[in-house]
Length: 75
Image (tube, rainbow, N blue to C red; front, side, top):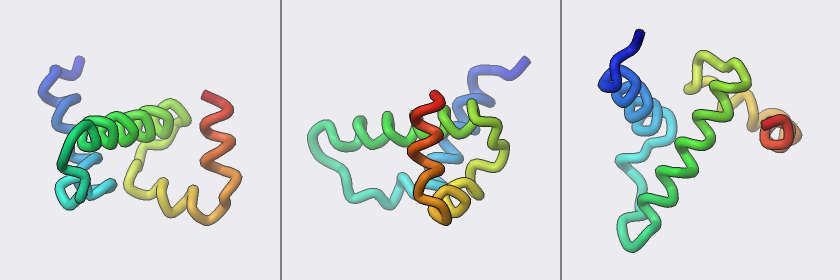
């Protein structure tokens, strides 16, 4: 069973590396929290869809514009 720390580290690493969260310009008001929530939702949807390599999925979904919408509709 994974510890809370392992899950937390995995989530933060994906948000930072794949979605470049540390370079985000959203730093005031509710924007940072809102963007983190959207990133978490995207990661969760991709994992529920069976994607193991989250870093490869933005390119995969960008090649076919129907894929992101279909992913949202299936959720």
